[in-house]
Image (cartoon, rainbow, N blue to C red; front, side, top):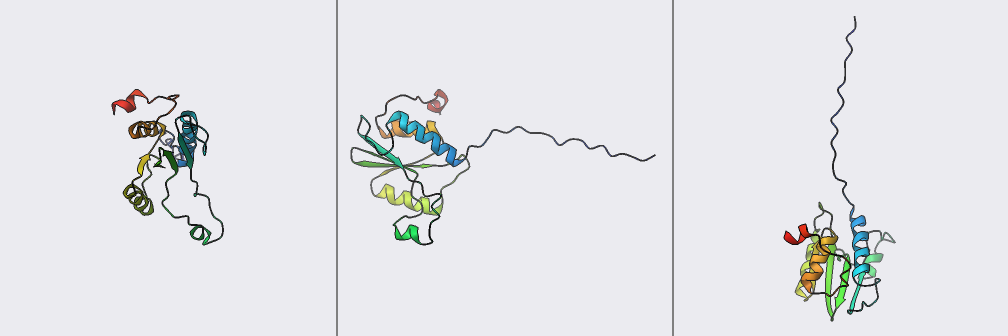
Length: 147
């Protein structure tokens, strides 16, 4: 009689899906459109915003530097009452690179506001903290307000 090995199935674990930074940027872009206006336009409250996408700029080597594009530039820019506000979007696991930390320091020392956000709720908290008027079409979840 031959012994037959019985395999026990591997344990299955459920885990929450992890949103990519691109997905978060799209969600936050949708939020900005709801709260202000289309990118590159002026909201009724005088806010102008736009995003800077350098992630997929392959181009010819050296072109970025020749065009004045530097590493570490934040993802989104808001301008209100002549003051510039920068937002860097990161995933829950994302961390700022050395270039991003250096850019953050330069922007803050120049008098700009700078924030790192991980989701749309953090964007709303940041905008409200900066006192930037928005349409109020979205609300901050109570759990975020209590934290």
